[in-house]
Length: 243
Image 1 (cartoon, rainbow, N blue to C red):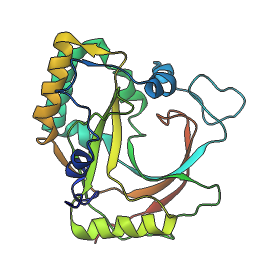
Image 2 (image 1 turned 90 degrees about the vertical axis):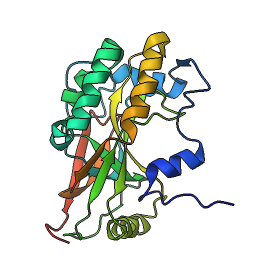
Image 3 (image 1 turned 90 degrees about the horizontal axis):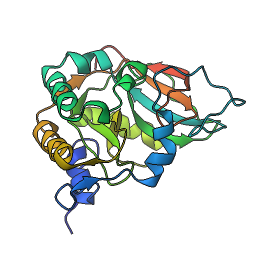
Image 4 (image 1 turned 180 degrees about the vertical axis):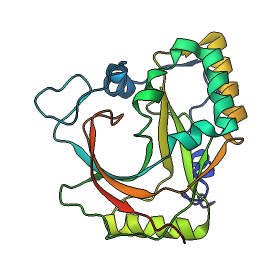
């Protein structure tokens, strides 16, 4: 049996081997699955939500919050990259309002990839500063679940960074899996010419986009919705400035 590619060093290869990517050639329409409709669509508004609170839940929010260890991704670095900018321009031209564009503004300071999800309330991050890590953000990816979400896979830039991330996961007893940063949301099913255009954009930009990022912190985050529109960073542990 062929071993899966390393989830941190080759997330796209790992996901492909798992058959996790949306089967573009096996369909002619991208239909939003039930989970996405229940837990994402109700969140696609144009105004920010107030900070965490348990007494004013709206659809698709939950209480108590879920705690996770996450790595923030510098959205300004992504938007400044020429290949990311080209993808966003092409996507806007091809799909228009079929993409929730206000999310780029509302989530600009919240873009992240989850290193260890679903931690207990007593979970504690290692004492800092942590040894620096280097990451590479890759191009768009859509999966077979949460089908309306456009992710950016995130990979360790080198074996040393992968080992450091693995050490944190072991400490938190978290599953070792590919890192994905949720970035954009679809507002409905995609079909016809828009489907063909989206399939072509994913294929063209997935390998082309490679944005190096060096995160400054590891976050312990509490959140009460799947887009972390209402969230609280409980603790920030810095990564050292140099390896």
